[in-house]
Amino acid sequence: MRTLEATGLAEMLFATAEAAFVVDAERRILLWNRAAEHMLGYPAREAVGLTCCELLIGHEGDHDRDRLCCRAPHVLDVHHFDVCTRTRSGSTIWVNVSALRVPVGEAGERTIHLLRDVTATRQMLALFRERLATTTRPGPSNGNGALTPREVEILRLISTGLNTKKAARQLHVSPATVRNHVQNILGKLGAHSRLEAVAYASRHDLIR
Image (spheres, helix red, strand yellow):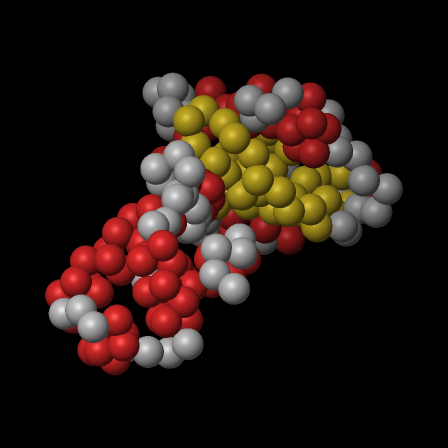
């Protein structure tokens, strides 16, 4: 670590609030700062000497190992990737890793890793995807979505832009009757609005 200390990198990494560690050419950890201890639960005395893969290997198999232990041809390349790992207590977390390989003269190479806990972000994205996947799309909710002739007639009037009162006047019924028919139409088509019902009916040739 003398070379890192000479450049001030070791002191800077120890002082930073961001989780960080440094490995040698064999991927063995030489430096493990307090922020890394706090994030993953491993004290420096346990982490130093292990390989980064032993502590951060993801649960997706060899793909994560290849990314974490990559040996890029350009020593100054910065690599960014997410990896799923476990803390010392067994909790699963997602960590975003930025790895910077640097030359250190006779000492060989060192790779600085900066870690950020992105578990909350990953969970939020997963929730969004789940909600999007399960969002109800307009479609028949009663098996066949068959509309009565009167419902088709009302839906056709709605498609022309008539409101409830005008549709009721044209059909010689009360506005309440039209509203009841509209609710039945929305339920049968699985639509959430008149516009959505008209769009669905048009796509499926329910109104002409």
